[in-house]
Length: 258
Ligand code: PGA
Image (cartoon, protein in one colour):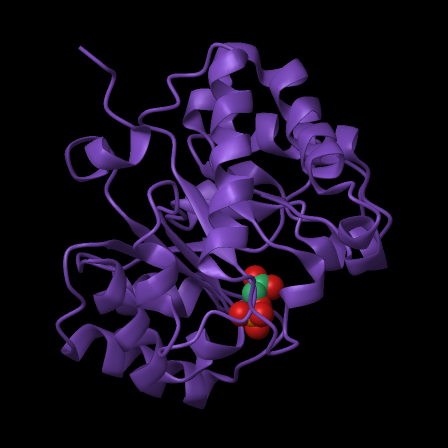
């Protein structure tokens, strides 16, 4: 009997996850309106989370507490505590009820010089404090055109696997091609699926229980392209930037995943 493809078992094994990455956007007033709309809407069966600027975590936790939508942060320190001015620790995020923390977003890799090793350490620290790290990987346009996509995402994921070993099962991976982030250019469902399948095989080769580990797609996911992307066998939801700031769009994307 031939083995069923990983995707065909997704409904049974992997609940879809949609995460809003607000980036450095929002205000007390606009956040309140956005969260009120999310709380009032039927979001479907996917797990939904919003990763917000850290200064808003108190208000967001207050607003979402006890409801269906989870929340998290966009980065954490690789250190436990100490003289790291401006940094926020995983323990602090856990105190504010965070479920998720994004680590290794391409904007942090590019603008803050974060290395694969540092990102892996951040994931380890997050796991230690009970947070689910959303580990971002993705290639630039130049890397894709040079045929290096698998080498780049394999290297980024490999650093986390090397450090975390079996703990990799506690991570959510987000494939975000850098050329698709905020550009309006989305990877086609087939292009994204090809990389997701490669990532899942890499995880399986490393001994992860890859059937349950979720791999999200991010990069210009919108209300009108989400369903096609999420229909792919190894795409388990999305990491949503710009569209997560517009209630109607984000709600539609969540429903497309659930
Ligand atoms: P985008 O951002 O949806 O605005 O392209 C995605 C991300 O950077 O996480």
